[in-house]
Amino acid sequence: MDVAQLQRRLADFAAARNWRPFHTPKNLATALSVEASELVEIFQWLTPEESARVMDDPDTAHRVTDEVADVLAYLLQLCEVLGIDALTALDAKIDRNEQRFPAKK
Image 1 (spheres, rainbow, N blue to C red):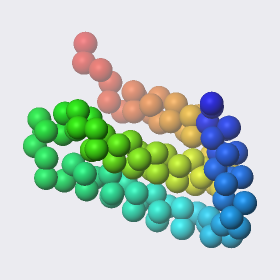
Image 2: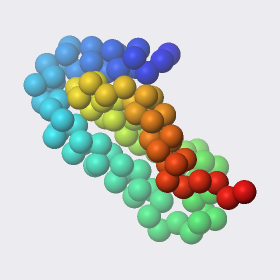
Image 3: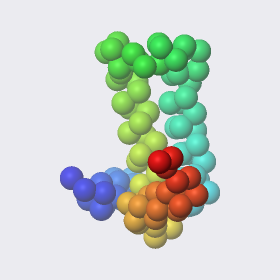
Image 4: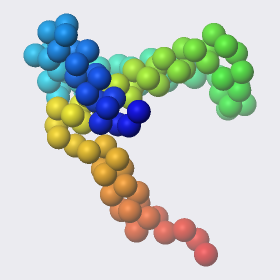
């Protein structure tokens, strides 16, 4: 499944529940922030070593996976509402970062 298909699926899901009026850029950005915070909460008090092993515990791995999915879902919905091609935006940002932060030779 590609990004456009996922966005369509998310849009259809929201439309079927009459949620589209609530999917404003402000609301989607806010929801994205909340979900990102929920992901951060999982790692909040872990040491760097513990955080590197977070996927070893099935219960924690499930929580991380769910929060990553929530973050991605809201990000894709925000991109759709604003008309942003997420992959093109990311590609352009990497190009700019390569110019700003050249690799040491």
